[in-house]
Image (cartoon, rainbow, N blue to C red; front, side, top):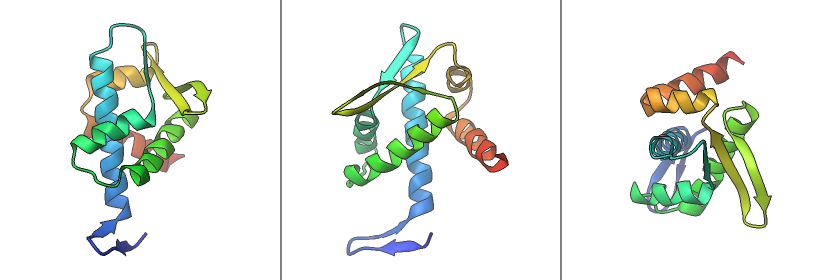
Length: 122
């Protein structure tokens, strides 16, 4: 995709999408490291709150990218949907899943690199 010019700044969709995926993986890694049980649950809005800490202004638009990335992870079998409600989906990551091990062992950049390379091979 091309750069999108707005009144305030120029967006490059691919770079912005990459950063959001990386921040999402950092969020998941932090959740896994601080987990006390066998399941970590989260909503896209919680990830978006972490994005706000990184200085993102347009969180509503970024939540769509987060949701799309999480749905992609669900399709690939890395995370599951725990519950659907009027407030949206609740996603979960089980300790027995190989993605949990990946997040606890590798740095977020390596995890994202693996996910992207696996996506290209499919």
